[in-house]
Image (cartoon, rainbow, N blue to C red; front, side, top):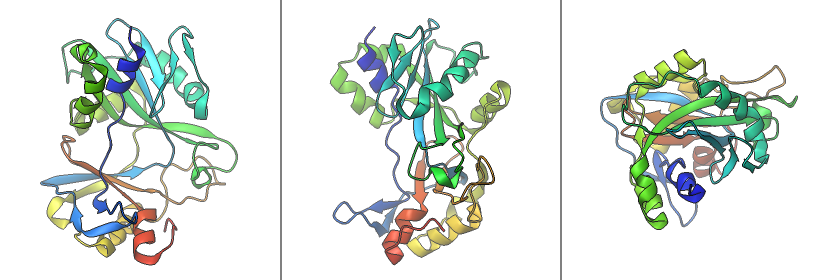
Length: 259
């Protein structure tokens, strides 16, 4: 079994910012943005660590961070980084008995993407708790065909970054959430693509409007409660983009504030 190939094929691909970031200065470009059509679902962007639970068709499973595999069933890999394994291992043990959604009938690799947040997972942890609590929310589920693992290692990354993975649409995500008792990142509402703002100022106003300036995943009363931002996605996940308060505040006002 080639762990490097499994790791690469199941990583979460890069997500564009709604307004493009100018690489010369790190600021948002008012003239270039991601184009949506139809309805757009707004979800809260949670500031944590990207974790993944990877299920192979033979029943084997792994836990990974954004960049590497941290744990394999049977303790074959062990890495305590960012508390991802300690938080997600009980979830993996439960999910291995799950009912598989009917999005794909062909055996392949199922990947559950979780945001692990709280404790000291990220610089924004105090927005969710100051007492050391830690939790997770699911934000995506992907399917990877086994044939990909026969590709050269250098080709798998390009395959992934160019849309190779098959993603669950909103209805199947809701099904996975309900049937397996896994909370999704908060849904903040649906917006018509035609109503999405063109300007930086307009998007910052939209962030304030849909979040109310308060996170919906605070873990206790000690939390600062500042949201990181919003992820915009079509119901079929064919188009997805992120928008963070920090990027808009820094570009427009030179500050990093979340409100």
